Length: 254
Length: 155
Length: 110
Image (cartoon, rainbow over all chains, first blue to last red; front, top):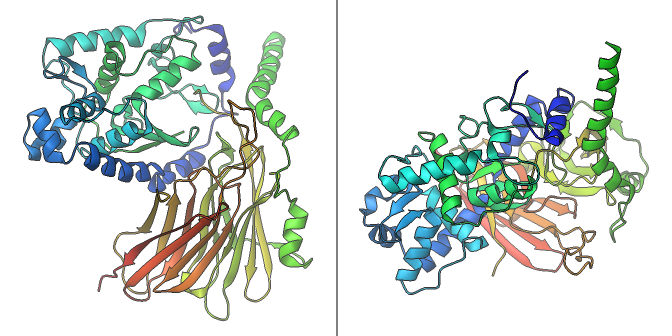
């Protein structure tokens, strides 16, 4: 019984989560079926309009990124990437901001609904392709991955929790308030390949970074800003866990 | 052994408090909206007081445990030939303990081919979800399923 | 801006005589009138889709009266028996009287 030591409150919930309050497989299947009618499909359609209005076309985005238009989808499946033009390991949304700025437009805020929709649309261009992040592509990516490792594992806040507290191999599958703690890289979750996703508890399209912020808030950790080096590093780390998994945007999450 | 069952008892109480009480608290003070209507009134408005029989021709699917009351999938399928002479005219969905029990009144025709309707409902507390089906022969058939609403997961 | 919505047919290919699923999804708050604004503390007035009409080539075949208990961004899925090529239109109205329409072509395979 020498599992990772958790804060007592969390341990309490895990210990008696047990069978009684776990959702049945039939129930879970019903929720999974809902993916066929994912309200976020409407955000993707809207995101396509925003993309056209703000960036112009796939060709324009490919040009900004310095890749051939026909290679864009594969290239996009490898984000976050080190982008020389921006001088940083950037999330795909930051690249869209850069492309807007270059076109003389005021970039959409990372936390805006518009950016979530436009970003999800652009990510959906890679649907069906495997997540192809390369953490060894260059020194910048290596550093970002190392930093992401720290962010993921560092215990912070009043309860001394880290991402690892709920997503470590030792606790994955335990039930926390009816829900099994997910293995972020598993075929069922493949987290990075299925975000942005529609969150049923929030009734909106949510990005991976926004989800990280929600976790931090609820676990009483200081919230890391979207687009910061630490947040991008965390996205690199979690995306690498889902490397090779098929991209399917938008996801549908509880 | 005794200590163990004692602990287990405490834990169960704790679990119930943690998982169930938020929804119970909510239901206790559920305010009445402008459309407030209870189940009996809503059913009577449709049947005019005629009897309703539970029928296995009506299949209602909903989760036994909804981990979030805001989005609960509900689907109803009725075994019916959907012919001009014999078809389902209406499927009514009720959330039996919401302040307004009515969720949707679906008027069908033979052109539907199959009598079915699915949607997602908000449930203010644990309760039965019920389907009331009206056939072209003037029958009133029903099916119901209990859905336990919890506040699941974190965030 | 018009209310965003989507109409889908499942499965993607079908022939005359098949029963398909037709669904309407709408981006709509479906306010119950029982929820308070977090900042002002005032009740947010009820605002929900109360009327949905499905028609094929101009002939209505399913009408739905819906209430505030449907989830935010609601989904309505019904069946439809394909009779011929044509167009399904879905008209929906909310309690503020905003009327919208969306639709999809029905193209049965031979």
